[in-house]
Length: 411
Image (cartoon, rainbow, N blue to C red; front, side, top):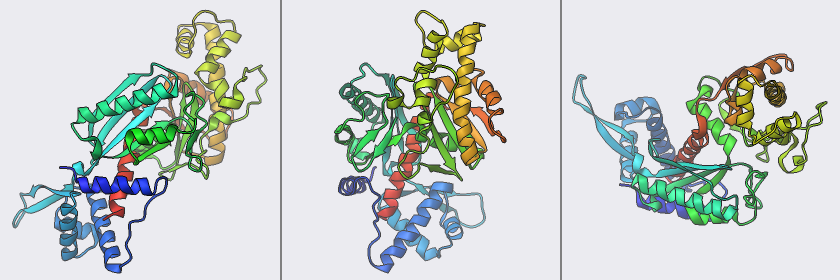
């Protein structure tokens, strides 16, 4: 059973302090020590549960009475539960404790140009429902209605109450402007950056709703579930309907002072060719040239005709079309230049390519070949295996961390 009183407190606090982290530490030293001890216990159980009291005493460095009192408080609050008993050892069997996954739920949604995706998970990270739907209109109002419907479907499929969803994370192109409460640089989604969209999202999903850049979320997913698990510093570069980057430094997502780290779509171009970047002011020069729309423009400029898409251009190149191969080679060169700017500044150990173009067969190899001509040290270059679910997976990870942090701030 979900701790409904905690869920209600979380929502009320989010409404009161929206846009900033709350500090739930109360004034007295005993309360502060209790909060710190319970945070230590919860973190240990999240990382390595189920654990016995003796395990927690050893791992957390706390006394047996302190561990017992902390577990009792956490169990009373619906945050920890008994998972069973440890048997097969000398002496009496010991109770095993684990975090209670039903302490709350996280809803993660990915707002794309053509598709909406989402999933709902409990606080232990188990996905309870997953789904997607095609966008039927470019209008922001319709997109929001379809996103709301998808969220309702996921909640219903998971068999939980809407009020039990303690954190909602929406992955979207652009940067959240806290002062204006709007999204900037979301040119790929018409109307999505208009005033009022954020308020509509909160009305639809509740006050515990945050919006994060979609590529940043994909980088988090890559860090926890993909190639980034084995390295401390890497970048995730997505090339598809747009182009963007998420940068992980020493295991932590780097967003920059204004949240604009990774907006490589705005890198300037100094190419010799007559690149058509007529919409560069809206999308950024690199994105206008290197996104799917840029690939199509380059293909037409090189003489390709008919109904074109980036996918068809790449398929034609793979089938031996020399004109298409020239277009793909130019695209690889542009992406290599974008990656070079990151390599020369951050020197990552790994670059992961994602998105429809970034994950195309043979494209990573072409980019790597061009990259070697541009930088003195070349990072490992791999293609993401997470596919279209990367943003949702990153949203779940961020949402679970935020939900537990809210728990810890109220312990």
